[in-house]
Length: 120
Image 1 (cartoon, rainbow, N blue to C red):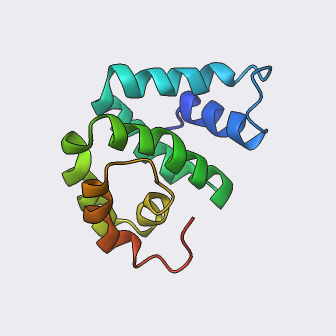
Image 2 (cartoon, rainbow, N blue to C red):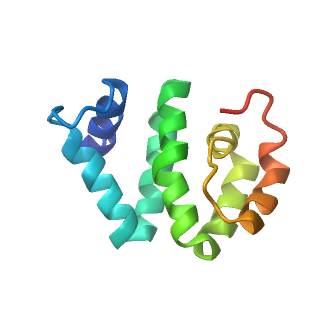
């Protein structure tokens, strides 16, 4: 079932991420969800990754919502991240574009991201 928030967030990013774009609210809503309800944010991140049709969008998920989750509450999500990285090559590729996280978390995900042939 399509998720309008996912569609609007991706559409906003694909169009160049301008604040004048009416879909800017989707970016704000995703950011707000990540902060207020990280567990729901995690589910949304997985939806965004699944829906990302190209590297441009996948990189925006990596540097945005996924990185935000892992930088704000890394211990809460690291096991889920590792499980997903083992299971899903697209998630692993997205994870390769996450930079702003604690070193100990980078060390844990490196075993997965190092297998990505063409990192983001």
